[in-house]
Every structure is written in structure tokens, then in C-alpha cells.
Length: 100
Image 1: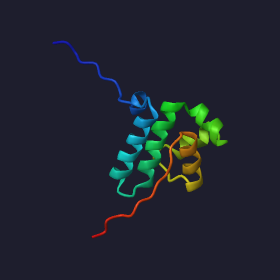
Image 2: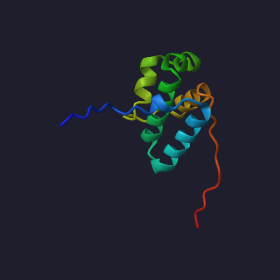
Image 3: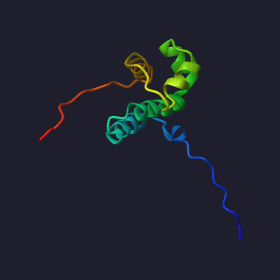
Image 4: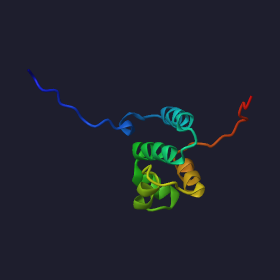
């Protein structure tokens, strides 16, 4: 029997267009149930797809601090989130929640 070789799935390899990146982030926000680290991890995936060096340059933050902030292991500041979203060409929107 032939052995099956598996590789680790990396979503950042599949995020090619700004539309795909925005759709991925929107889906992650919906699935996060308010978990900020989950959203930060999604932004990290998108940043890696775009190129972390370029995102670091565009945000004025170091690559190391971005990797830490967007690792999904800590909650980054809103300032960092906004800088990263701007660097990625994404916008943060708000809409009324249907609470009924």
C-alpha cells in the first residue's frame, strides 16, 4: 500500500486577491464569536499572504512585533489592528446588529 504524504495547510497560500482576503476576514469575524485572538490570527494569515515585510514597512511596525501581535496567542491593540487593515487595503465597517 502506498503511503499518503500530507502537508500542513496554509490558508495564506490561497489568498491571492483583495476580494479573497476581505471575504476570508469577514468569514473569520462571523465565526469568531467575539474572540479577538481569532480575528488577529486571520489578519496574520492575510498579512503573510501579502508579505509580512511589506506590511511591516507600511505599518511602521517591526516584522517581529507583527508576527507576535497577529499570532492568535495575544490580543493586539486596536491601533495595531487598524494599521494592519490599512496596510492590507481593508476597511473596518460597522452595522447594526439584529438583537431581536
